[in-house]
Length: 68
Image 1 (cartoon, helix red, strand yellow):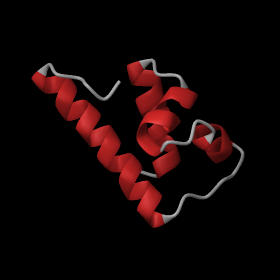
Image 2 (cartoon, helix red, strand yellow; image 1 turned 90 degrees about the vertical axis):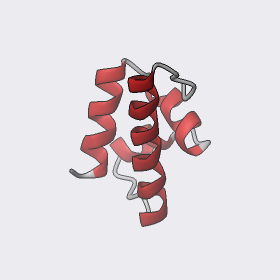
Image 3 (tube, rainbow, N blue to C red; image 1 turned 180 degrees about the horizontal axis):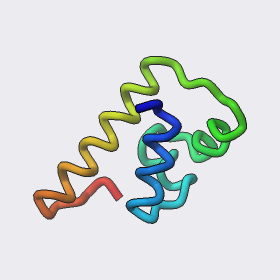
Image 4 (cartoon, one colour; image 1 turned 30 degrees about the vertical axis):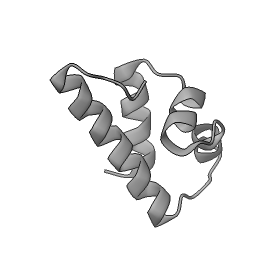
């Protein structure tokens, strides 16, 4: 799945504000807003975002969601 769609789905499912996600996942509160405006993320950043989403989901399943 394209990273933009993955992030948007994640935000919707977790009811997470885009600025908070950007801050937690990449230390960049404008990340999602910039992506919506056409910002292309580098492969390293895409990997970082995918790992954050996977870790958040994994923590939620085990009941220790420290990511938020």
